[in-house]
Length: 224
Ligand code: DX5
Ligand code: ZN
Image (tube, rainbow, N blue to C red; front, side, top):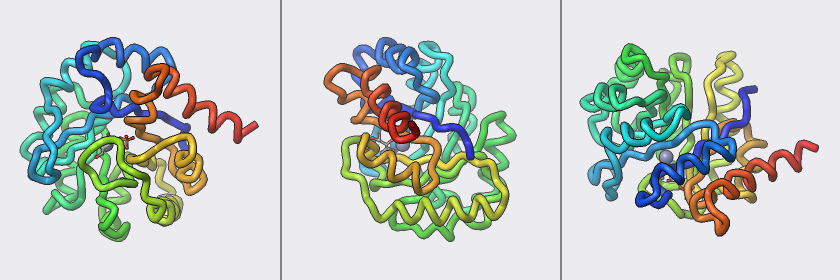
């Protein structure tokens, strides 16, 4: 089983204090920085692009985990790789030739992730599963931070964990959407090892650092 990792979702932070928000995450032991790219087409909202990713890179040494919620991702892979993406995750709904997209991501020197909307069945990943470094299960409909966790996605994580185990794959199994001290342990038990958190981190009353510590503590307490 891969290490337990926390990936704060930077779009939920206060952009007027971007470098401080990132360094609070870093000092509190965040593992990756999750960057949510939305295009106003695949999802209704528009968030950030390569320029913003490059700014994050200048503020941190943390690996960047770029989640592309955009139509036609193939057209933009190079720009995100150049801007400093360490991992690029694409939605299966947006890739006509998923295997080709994964190859392209790897050829750019990034690790490759695939993800799927809550309504898309886990079987949509099957052909690509042996090729990927990461699988992301969305536990909300992609679009914005602060939505309610969908408990139906627990069994999807279990299903994908079983598939990865059957393949003897070391790919990370990441979850994104509505993670909190209550929901994170459920997804961990189901077999996830990477946890994206937006509001639980940046909406924490004592700031992002305490938000990360609270998520780490809930896991540490259960393991004692
Ligand atoms: C949703 C994004 C998430 C989001 C998470 O479309 O992919 O990464 O920012 O935010 P919370 O943790 O608040 O659900
Ligand atoms: Zn995300």
